[in-house]
Image (cartoon, rainbow, N blue to C red; front, side, top):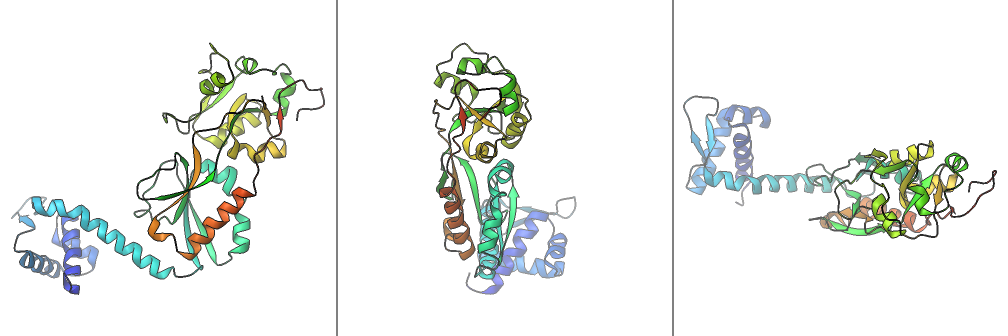
Amino acid sequence: MKTPIHLNALRAFEASARHQSFSAAAAELNVTPAAVGQLVRTLEDWLGAPLFHRNAGGKSRLVTTETAERALPDLRAGFDKLVSGLERLKEGGLAGVLTVTVSPAFAAKWLLPRIERFHAICTDTDVRLDTNLKAVDFVAQRIDIGVRYGTGSWPGLTADKLLDEEIYPVCSPEFLRKNPRLRKPADLAQHMLIHDLSMDGHADFPTWDAWLRKAGVSNAAASRGMKINNSAAVLQAAAEGQGIALARSVMAHDDITSGRLVRLCGDISFQSPLAYYIVYRPESANLPRLATFRRWLLDEAYATPLATTSFSGEISSGDAR
C-alpha cells in the first residue's frame, strides 16, 4: 500500500465499519456516499476479498466479514499513531501545549503549589492538566507526560522514579492539644482514624493495619473510622481536627511545614513500597517541552526534603509542633 488512494480507502473502510453505513461514513469524512463506496470497492479489489456482507435492508446494511473484523483493531491503532505523529510535527519546539496527567490529590498537594516555577522558566509552554484517578490511554487521550503512583511498571510507558514516600500518622495541632496522651502507637487506635481509600484494593497500598503492625500494635480495631477515597481530602479532614490520618509524606509535606498538621510517632519509620514515577511514551522522550518538564519535575523533587516536624513525646500546653 504505497499510494495515497489506499490510505483514503482504509479511512473509508474503517469509518464504514464503525457506522455500518456508507452514508454515515461519508458524512464523517465530508465526501459523498458514492465516493466512500468506490474507495471500499477499490480496497476490496486490491485485496481480492470482500470486506462487508451487504444487506438489502434492515438497520445494519453493512456487516464486516470475519477477516475485516480481525484487522480493524490494528488499523484503528495505526490511525491513532498517525494522528499522534501529526501532532508531534506541530510540536517541534518548546512553544505550545503540554498535556500532563496526574491524580487530583497529587495535583492539589504537590504539583499546583509548584507549577508557577515551571511557567517562570518555560514561558512559551502552556500546561493542560488531566486529573484522573484511573490510568489513562496516552495515545487516545493525547497525553504527553504524567505522574503515577505505584510500583513503576505500566505497559507501553517509560517510568522514571520521581519521589519515594514515607507513611506516618498526622493530626492537627488543636487535636493534639485536646488529646495530650497521644504518646505511643497504641494510643492512636483509641481515637478516630481517617482511612485513605484512594487506592483501595491495591495489595501494596499502606493501611492503618499495616502501620500499626509495623509499630508493634496488635488487636487494634484499626478498620473502623472515617473512610475517604481522596488523599487530599484525608489530609483536609485531619487538618480540620476530625481525627488522625495515615499520611503519605509527599502529600503531607507542605501541610506539616506550614504547621497545619503535626506528625505523630516520628521515631517509627515506615517506607511505602509504592512511589511516584514520571511516565511517558518512549517515542516522545525527546520532545523538547516534555524533556524540559521532566527535568523540572526531577529538580523540584530533589529540592523538596521530607517533612520531619513530628511529635513523639510530651508537649506543653503552648507547643504542638
